[in-house]
Length: 471
Image (tube, rainbow, N blue to C red):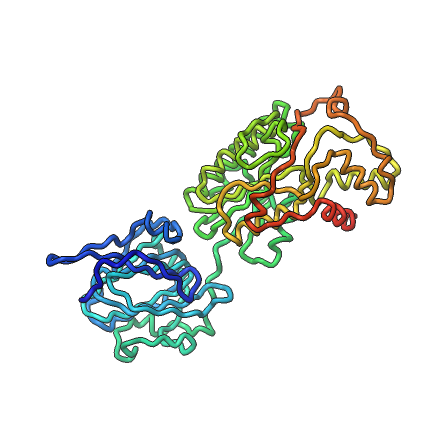
C-alpha cells in the first residue's frame, strides 16, 4: 500500500453539510508507519464538533470488493482506514433540503472523515485485508439499531459510481434489499424540549417554533423541574437541546419562608439537575436570566458584571446562572422587565386608562421592557446561527425609561392623557407592605447580542404592537 507521508493536518468541507474530510499526517520509515488517527485538540481547532466518542469499532474485510452500507445511524462517526484502501460513499438521509446529497472519496490510511448523525455511510474495499475503523459517540444497542435509516447500494437516484460493479462485489443479503431513495423515510433531527411551555415565554416559544415538528413543549404537568422522576422520563439520546423557560418568578413571595424554599428548589436545585443532564448527554442548555442578579447601582449592566442580587429571587437566579455557566454548550439570555401573553404591566396600565383610573407609578426604577416574543426569537436566532456559547443581554432597544414613563406611553397610546399618570418613589409605593428589594437601574447593554446578529426591536414599536393585539 502506498501512503503519502507527512501531510499537514487539514480539513475540507464536502457537498453534504457537516461531513468533513481530513488529511492526516502519517509518519513512516523502514519499520512501517504511525499516525495520530484521532487528536481531539488539533481537530477541534479545525472546527470538528467535539462529538465525544465513546466506542471504537473496527471492520476487517478479507477481500477487495467487499461492500457495506448504506446505513444512516443515530450517532456521529469519525471514520478512517487502518490498513488498505476504500471507496467511500455517503448520502444525506436526514430530513431537510439536502436529503439525497451524495459525496464520494477514496480513502487510505492518510485520510479520515467525520459523518454526522443521519448521513448514510457505505464503503467498498479496493484492496485485500482492509481494516476500516470508526469512533462513535453512542453505544450500540438493539434499540438504537431500530432507529437506523437504510438506502439501497444500487439506488438509481444516488447513482454511486462503485469502482467494482455491485454484481461482482461481496454484499450482505440485507444490503441487497434496502429501499430506494423514494421509499426512504428521512431520519428526523434530534428533539428540542421546551420547559415551562405554558408561561409567558413558553407561549412565545410555542409561536416561534409552531412549524418545527422537532420541538416538543412541556408544561409543569408534563415536566416538573422540582421532580426528580421527570428527569428519568425521557430517552435523552433523542434530544440535543433543552430550553428552560420554567422558573419561580414571584419576587415578593420569595421573601417568605415558603417562597424562599420554593424559589431555591425551582431556580437552583431544578436548574442544577438540568445542567447535570446537559453535561451527561452533551445537550445545549438555554436558560433565561434576569436583571435581578444585579443590585442596580450601575447605569448599564454588561454580561460579565459580577453578581450582586438584593433579594431572594435575584439570589436564586444568580445561583442558577452560575450553575448553567459550567455546561459546555449553554446560552443564558438575560432579560429585564418581561412583558408577554398574560397579566403584565402594559396590559394593566391599558385597562386603567380605559377605566379612567389615574395611577401613581414608580419613577425611580429605570430600564427597558423586554417582550417575550423577542426572547423567543433571540433564542431561536442563537441556536440556528450557532452563535458563540455564553450569556447574552436582551431587552427592547431605545432610551432608558422609568415605569412611570412607560405607563404614560401606554396611556397616550390608549387614547388617554399622559398627565393621568403621576409619579411615586419605590420607597413610598411599598410603604407598609412586604416587598422584595428591587434594583433601581436595570438597563442592559445590547452590543453582544447585536453583534451576534439579533437586532432587538425598538421599545415603542413593540409597545404599540402589544397594545394593538391586547384584548
